Length: 312
Image (cartoon, rainbow, N blue to C red):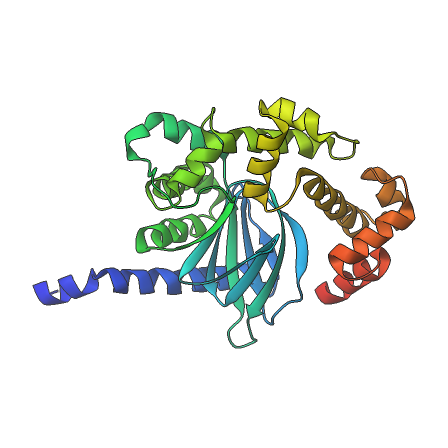
């Protein structure tokens, strides 16, 4: 290879293009005809859809989401995020979202991946590399953002996908690559957002810990004063920081968590609507049905039938 050819092959835009095409081809090969593939690599899930989808509500864990092909919309509260293969979506706390795939076809299916973040790994990286973390950011409050994806990040994800069918190697190498991915995120534009979630003493950390507690106690009747006390904040400060990070109030958040879990129970465990309502903390099945219809666009059992038909 001549010096000219060599310099051409290492141009950043060519490296990005190779990385993006590689991501799409790997996801398509691994998913086959499946809409979803939960891999054996911790927290890594692949998606393939040959058509646009209806809006779907669910709880999205702290994750980084990439697209190999297609386009997606994610709504949190009143904020809408659009992203495609040139960007990634990142969430630093559990969030109730409404998402839909808006660009996909049989010829060019939507191809994407989600990798949940390991906060223990993230915290260790922060402690080990305090000088390398990006701290300047215009808005680090809301726990979700869209950012341009670069070639090194694509390269790391491609190497991670290469391990999906190599269980012996992935057990050792996958955590190393996931650590690299988190390190690159900490060094990039989203470093301050992740620092706000993972570093004790930060308001984001206090809210994220409260959300962890709420995930275990969402069925209970909970007072905002109690949650504020657990966060070590005044009620007004707790309200402010919680809403800034989740785009909703604590009680709205709890309601969406309850309804999402009820939907999961009915869909995957075949629980009827009344039983699901009581299991997630509702005392009135009629109130549950009203609020469920408002969130998911159809009464409980009709919604579940629609979901089953879509996946058939």
